[in-house]
Image (cartoon, rainbow, N blue to C red):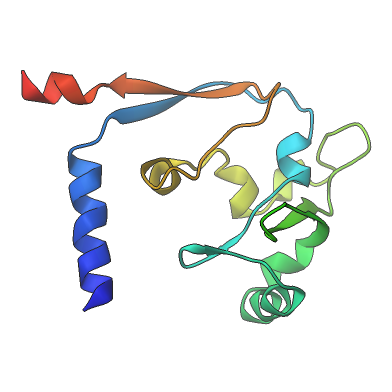
Length: 134
């Protein structure tokens, strides 16, 4: 029952929220590749045990390593293909996670999406909520 409720709320928020668009381009600074947050369902990964289970479930996660921890206990990850210059040494064969960056759609609605200072990508409102009322 709880999942159905969450599903309905998510889609209502999506229908009546502002529309967003991604503008800009990658600055090749590597900040997004060294401060990655992974989610299991709607929760951030906070333990090494969760990360080990993720790696067993999907081998793509073997391309990442733990790089730190946020104040709330959320683990930060770094792509193992990131060079010291902030570029990707396997750019042509990078993971889907990296190819889709910045994949923002679901996280904006839940208030969990942010870009890094200096990131070339910006997320802007494309269609404001008020325009739906007109």
